[in-house]
Amino acid sequence: MRGPVGRAVGLVAFGGWYAGQFLVANVQVLGAVLSPRLTISPAAIRVSSRARTDVELATFIALVGLTPGTMVVGSQDRRDEGGSPLLDVHVIDAADAHERVEQLETRLLAALRGTRATTTDAAS
Image 1 (tube, rainbow, N blue to C red):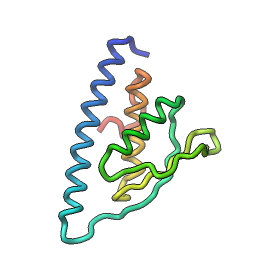
Image 2 (cartoon, helix red, strand yellow):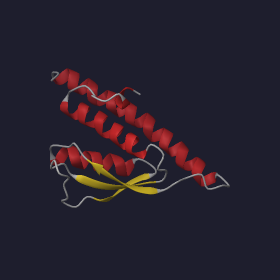
Image 3 (cartoon, rainbow, N blue to C red):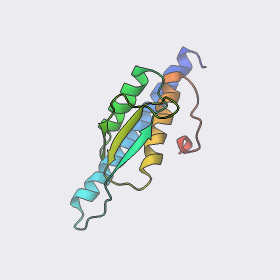
């Protein structure tokens, strides 16, 4: 664990990363809306969250909902075999949807917990 200053820096860094992802998602959705051809592949995906607390889970759900082109459509008290919360997420484009949602969660949890992101996805 990092100290309070390290955690604050991590949260600010996450905020900057998320703002960039938010802008990219806005441009992608705008491109899909303005395109004369249908270039999207909407889908519903099931995500097994690694959130340990209600605050982590609620923050993750809120950020997914704020990101253009994604929305949590199911989060009832369902759990996978390991006890992790299951979420149903609607995405406007199924291409690498799982990876993008997992990257968001990985970075968010690292920032909230004051640790480093642990997947190779989180480095991008």
